[in-house]
Structure formats: structure tokens, C-alpha cells
Amino acid sequence: MARHGGRGWNSKVLGAALGVTLLAAGASVWTAQAGALGGPSPKATTSAARGSAVKPVAADIAHASDQGARGVNITIDDGPDPVWTPQVLDVLRQYGVKATFCMVGTQAQAHPDLVKQVVAAGHRLCDHSVSHDTTMDKKPQAYQAQQILDAERMITQASGGVRPLYYRAPGGAFTPYSRHLAASRGMRPLGWNVDSKDFERPGTAAIVATVEQELPGGPTILFHDAGGDRSQTVEALRQILPRLKEQGYSYGFPVR
Image (cartoon, rainbow, N blue to C red; front, side, top):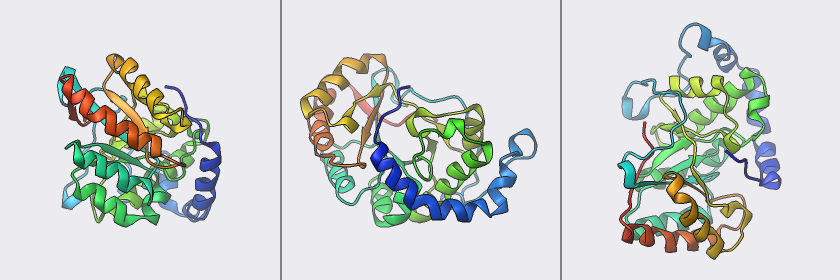
């Protein structure tokens, strides 16, 4: 999977997360978990959604839709953002589409009201790490564990107790360790088939064309609701969502 850009935005998020990371580095929970995959199951760092127990899921990277061969998964990355997430939610509501929101931990922590709005609208949550470090696969396992588990905790707390059901590595920087750790926490590793390239702001028409050209290759489409001006994304969704329905597609969630 190609790694998208946004280095300038990443540096801002990394800076915002620095305090969290330093605090976490001194904690024993996630460092203990860093070596846990070869032994006992990792300890929970967050309560289960609505009181349910955490159940491990498959560790392979999901791409398929729970709606079958004509299903489409809309996934929205890097938020929540106070400007663009509400606009994305409005478009999804207008067309009756449910999506999976892959949230950065510091963003969720900063905007818990938006996390709750996403959940209340029937969308699903996805752990997208604490600070969107696209070099996570080059970092020690302890760092990977901190990024995944602290983000899980932040998102769950911001949502009011609803846990993320997926884990998407920033830029697709998965490792066997990170996949199995996330899966042990009930978060299915989540990939994508269609990179809309909306992060590069190529124009609404280009985003729509990319989605239509690449969709035959798989159902999971990557969009963004943070990291800069996302007006092109909002307009592209406004065009794509009804068009795909007219073509006989149905909207679902990634398989678990």
C-alpha cells in the first residue's frame, strides 16, 4: 500500500503527541505489553465497549466488505477535525451511508464531542495510532505498542466507552507485531484498495475519477477528514455516494 504524504501535518500531530508519548514512555503497562505477544495476552489498557469483553480477531489485513461482492467500504482518516468532520458527517447522513472513521489519538482526545457524534450516527471507529507516524514499522515494538494502545485508550475515552473495531497503520506501516497486537485487542487490521488521493488535493473531478477507476480492484476506499483543506473530499463524496448506489453498490463496513 502506498504511503500518503502530509508530512507538515504529521509534524504538528507528532508535536501535539510528544507530551503523551513522554508520559507513556515512563509507564510500565505498554512496555510490558511490547513483549507480550510471545507470552501471556496483553493487559487491557481500556475498558471494553458498552461493558462487553474484548475478543481477539483475525490478524490479517482486512480489505473486503461485509456487504459482499458489490459492497463498498467508506473509510475516513486522520480526524476528527472540527471543520471537516461535521461536513463529512452531513454528506454521509444525506445519503444514508455508514463509514469507518480512522482516528488519530490526539485528535480524538482534543475533540471528544466529534467522536461521540460519529458514534451516535452509527459509524464505526478505527485506531489510527497516537500521532500518525508513517515510519512506525521501522520503530521498536515498545513504540508500536504505545502508539496503538494509547490511541485505543484515547479514542475509547473520547467516545464515552465505545472501542475502535479496527486498526489502520499510518501510511500502511504495518508489522506482524502491530497486526497481532491490534488483533489481540479486538481491532482488525484494516487496509485499503482505493487511495482516492484526496490528501493531495488534486481537484474534485480527479478524486472522483480515481475512485471510479480503481474500485474494481477492491471495495475499501480511503478518504481524509483532516490534515488541511478537505473541501474537495466533501464535494467528491457528495458526487460519489449517490453515483455508486445508482450503479448497484451497497455501503457496508470492512469485514471483522
